Image (cartoon, rainbow, N blue to C red; front, top):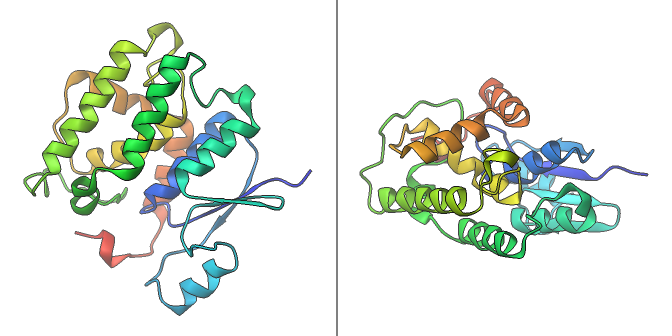
Length: 222
């Protein structure tokens, strides 16, 4: 059987690519990785990505004749095709919450995204935390983490948002990276959750690869 292909961008910068990559690695779903460097997003990028993606964006999952783009749609596809991996919580209340906060993450937090781009190899302690709306976004993120840990994060199952690793953790992993780069102030529950995500072997592998990259994307440097 042919393995699915996950088309991604630079590991240092591509927050959207990290999400399905991390979920597949944690779940043990075998796949081939195809990394296309962002470069300057000029003709070379356009030609390379056009071979794969109808949106000319990453990530993109190719599974036989099926193509799935948008990180959240890819995560939903993974959960549907590999239900035994439990990429969503089995309890309906927890599963509904996980899907809701994942959708909020996918669509929101524009100020945090704008002023705190994912840049794993950078160190920007305190930088841009005073920009309009940034701390509002940070506080909303940490409120979500606190609510999930307190309501659904059974300690016996682990220290993720819903106990074991789920798609919701994959969706928030780039935020963990951004808050780490900028040394944003967080409460103890959020700090413990961030440490849990950063300690995932696959997250460590991705981060090490990101730090080793040499490519520079000006729009993601501050």
